[in-house]
Structure formats: structure tokens, C-alpha cells
Amino acid sequence: MSAAGARPALAELTVAADPEAWDGAGFESPGGEVVVGAVRIGLAGLGAGHRIVHWALTGLRTSDLDGLPTRVAGSPPPEPRAAPHPNGVVSLDHVVAFSPNLDRTVASLESAELDLRRVREGPTSAGSRRQAFFRVGSPILEVIEHPPNADAAADLEAPARFWGLAFGTDDLDATVAALGPLVGEPKEAIQEGRRIATVRKEAGLGLPVAIMSR
Image (cartoon, rainbow, N blue to C red):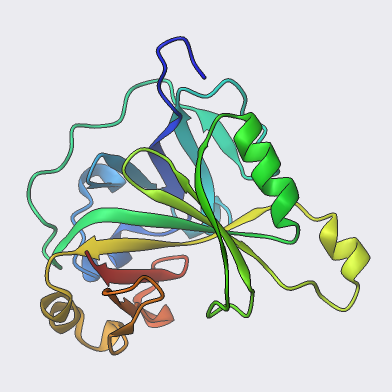
């Protein structure tokens, strides 16, 4: 652990998406940045890369996180946003990543001192049966072991990769109403007592996005 005793915490994400699309989905993005909770999300345009271009964490000793594009944050996280976004979003609940080899990815993240909370055995919507959950400040990093392709041996050598984001809202029904046709119907989430709704591709947010009750 770092000299200060603090675990690495998420400060910034850069997403390959246009601010206009996020504005249209009810996020405020002055200067091409969306602040959710204490995380800054930079919107770098559709030509910037693929989904989550990179993330930046405070307190890291290494940026080698099993292939996840990572930077050491040069500044602390932003001041938490006090007001909800127009769509009702108040927090970044979790960041989703896939790994063909969960044990390898967990070992890499633990060696970088990320805070492993648990490994879950059980079916997921992605078809996997294993997930690992790391605390990265307020949000969670959810790593899903992705089922191997036909060429399983080659697939197991692939690096971990980012997939999408899930945000939190205090009133999921109101958020779904605000988004209208840009979001699907709420359903029960894997997390007991919570519900989730998926933002549709037509919203143009550049990556899979879900909204969850808190």
C-alpha cells in the first residue's frame, strides 16, 4: 500500500464520444467534461479511440493493469458534483471490464494494490459465471470473466478490456422518464434490491451505459 495508506481511486475517465450526445441524454458537459460524483469523464470525440480510451487513478505505483489502458492521475479527483444531472444521475456506480482470464487479471490488479472486495460465482447477463469487484474510490470496478471464443487458447492470452459504465440515480423511474426512447424498461439487477435500465445505442454515448437505482 502507498505511504499514505490510501488505495488507488478513480479520478478520471476518457470516453470516445461527442459531448452533444451526452447533453442529449441529460448529462451536463461544459467544456467537454462530465463530472459525476467525484469522477471527471472527458468526452474526446468519436475518433479518439474505442469506448473507454483510458482511465486515471490516484495512488497508483504502476499503470500495468493487465492491459487496461491506465494513467497515474496527476491531480486529485474533482470536487464532488452536488446537484444531480438533468437526467437525475448522481453517481458513477461502476466501471465494467471483461477479462478472458479472471484469475490473471485479479492477480495483476491486486499487485497494483487495487482493493478486491469479492469474487462472485454465478450467472451474469454476459453469459459468464465469474466476476470480481474492486473498490476504486467511490465507484466499483466490475471485472467479468468473458467466455472464451472458439479459439480458447488464443483468447485466454488476450488482455483485459473496458466495456461500459453504470450510473446511479435516486429515482430510476424519473430518470427513465427523462430519457424517454433513449432507454429501455427497468428490470431487476443482479445486485439484490436494485433495478437497472440500459441506455440504447441510439443515444450515441460511445459505449454501453446503464442507469441503476442506488
